View 1: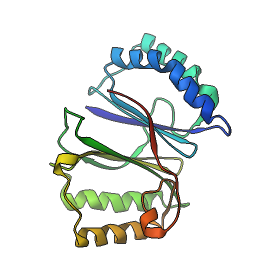
View 2: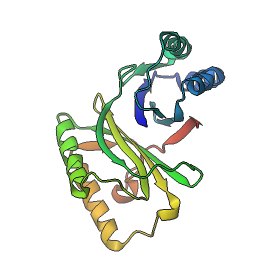
View 3: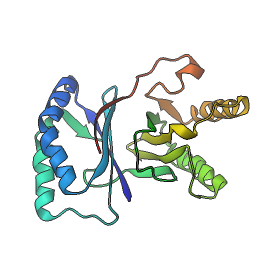
Length: 215
C-alpha cells in the first residue's frame, strides 16, 4: 500500500465556492477513485487550508486516459484554490509511524493537524522526528497508532493519524508531562494553525474539519 497527500490554499472569499464545487464534482471524483482503486480518501480543512490523503496499491500508475480524466475533474474546481503541494507529486514525508493496517475502519479515530514552520526550521523539524523513528527502531507499531504520517510543503506541516480506539488507554501523568515538554519545545520552530495544543498555551486556533471522505 502506498500513502499519498496533497495540500492547497483556498483563495480569499472562495471557501463557499470550494465546498459547493466539491459537492458538484463528488460523484465524478469518487467514480474516478473507484476505477483506479484509490481508497481511504479524505479531505480536511482548517482556516483557508485544505489537506487531502489517500492510498493505492504499490506501484499503481494512472493511464493516459485516466490522467486526462483527473485533470478534467480538477479543472472544474481549480479556480477556487492555489496549490501548496506540487500537483501529481507527494509532499515531503517528515515522519511516519506505519503500524498494523486495520481493514475495519469503524473503530478508528482520526487526528489531523496543521502547523507552519518558522523560517529555516524545516531540517530541524525533520531531525527531531527522525529521532523519534530511531527511538522505536522504525519497527511496526502494534497500536494504537496504526497509520501516522506527517507531510510538509512550502513551510506548512500536515499530520494525519489513524488511531485504534480499542487500544487507547488513559494517559499517565508521566506521558502527559512528556507530551507537554515535547510540544512546548516544538513551539520554538513552528506555529500552530489547528487547536491541538491550545489546552497548554491558552491560545485559540482553528478546529480541523473533515469535509469529505470516500473509502
